[in-house]
Image 1 (tube, rainbow, N blue to C red):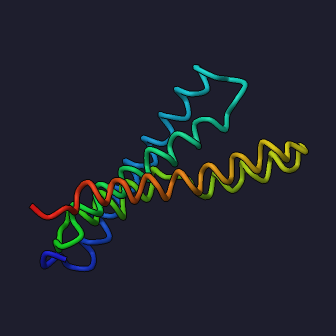
Image 2 (cartoon, rainbow, N blue to C red):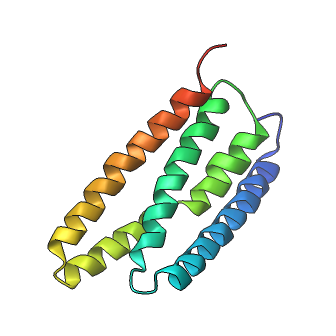
Length: 128
């Protein structure tokens, strides 16, 4: 991409990923102060915002061969979004026998996440 060496591409992704992971941690800490009784809320917000952002950024760089794509989409947003955390939280809800909450959480994250990515992509990839 943009004549980057493989080492430079990995470094670019790593820098973005580290920043995205730190941003995810900051959001989680903020939500724990705001809503300490619902630690799952931070994951939901991060996944929805991350899905929208990944759609926006990927749509913008869809036709370009850019360092920014590696840094922002693969790195930052890959580190920021939390599907693995989502899976663990969903499992925790099931273990606690919160079946209705788990079903609503899973369905809303999938449907709204796909919707956010589609909306973001549509907004930034329109001709003109």
